[in-house]
Length: 221
Image (cartoon, rainbow, N blue to C red; front, side):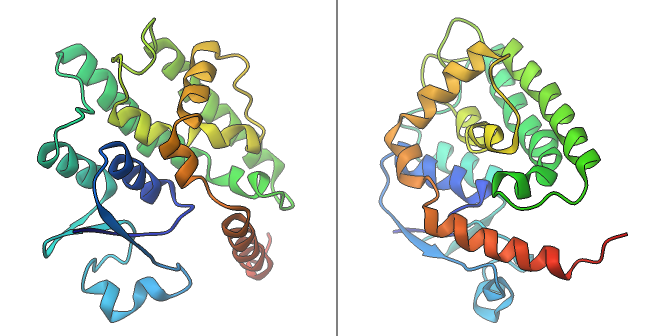
């Protein structure tokens, strides 16, 4: 059986979790608490880079979430979660990579805002919102009359972007200027896979406590 080592609130983990659910695969979830468990020898044997997620399939360890998604799509092709048309495939891949390389790093300063923690640097918050807006405009322009990016059905673009974009309003980034993207977001969060993997209040509170402790130990300039 497939085994996913994950952390529930991590978007990197959640995108794999959602894909497993959408493909209706049997799998086991193993939570890795990022309070030191990722540095233990047992986990380092799975991933020497001490990151989650890790997917184990019959003794084969796969690290890096995008590689895991490609593996699942190739090995378990139904339902198909990547378009076959060249242009549509490019759209899906662009959304994946822009989400990982641009949107997620840009929104790191917004995490405290999302959790209701005090903001130490308002200027960084505003810069993060501007960077997020650039990505959201790009995504809005990629959506057409179809319900998903380059497809009539859910793709891996949704799995990646859809674990980040719905959180942005919590950080003060409104989706009101992006009607197609807002409707897309509503479609995703209504799906059972999104609802099943949504962070519980307990998980959010635990992350809030960890971040508050880290912020308290970080010297201010």
